[in-house]
Image (cartoon, rainbow, N blue to C red):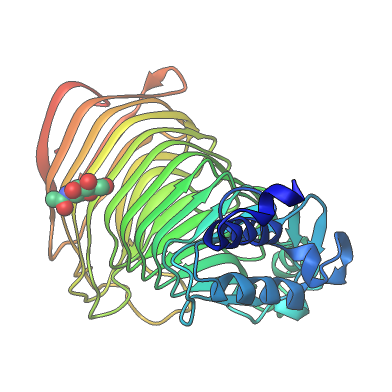
Length: 400
Ligand SMILES: *[C@@H]1O[C@H](CO)[C@@H](O)[C@H](O)[C@H]1NC(C)=O
């Protein structure tokens, strides 16, 4: 071998050396991989790995090529982290997680921090696999006994980022919301498993706001609050093949809490099974002045299993003790909302409830092939300030 190499031209030797050196930097695949264990992380669930994770991010971020951060099996205790893409050279970072990221169980550590695991201004980020455990039980117990408690931290937040894929992530027992998407474009959340007990307060599954092009697919969400909620400024949202329950259902809103507010438009929610939830498909707005709107919504192919409010628009929301709004009308204009092929069982007699703004009645509501029953009896529909049409089999009889 050595004699052969001696006769190779210099450029070929350089090439061989380059390939050898590059392959020694990577563990697998063509991109550089940064294993958190190499940055001092310990998978014992007790050692604080915050700095190791941040160092691994800094290394991946400094890589000129797309790079991978790898988290092997095991439990990793981490405090609040912000992974910022602002100064990254890398055009795409992949975070491949085979282990579990664990929050401190004492809610006083993170309870007043907005987001535990935060991604800010990233582009081309992928988070593949993994489990994050918010260890929220202590905070829920505090909240459920009406003590003075912090709000709690959101488990995972993606902010002001573009082209993000989260695939196969499990989020357990968040203190507050499990996942928040805010200020983003082109985000895909696929194969998510989100789980917290029915009685855990404010543990919303996925909350999206001020974002466009958000796809949520093939996910199981069981929480103590909304499975998915869409706040102001959401557009081009697609949610498909979701199991929701327990929880409060899928909600557009609350909207209209501010006078000036961006609207929600072009939302498709299809093929969802709701099991034992408080609501199914809900639109909810505050009863006070706002320039917000909801338009272009398609709710299609939903199965309701013992859902208290399968189809509901509530424009008279007014939380107690949060300022006066009673007697006021919601300023949020709701139009062009279609319910198509919605069937199953309601846990209350009123299966379809449209309670719209007296100042801006809902318009262009369409019911098509809706079949909901209540304890083997006919369910009923209630319409206040709601206009639209119905087609196909409608049971309960449409009140539009
Ligand atoms: C509506 O949103 C979908 C994605 O959910 C997108 O494919 C479609 O182009 C959007 N339509 C308009 C008119 O923007």
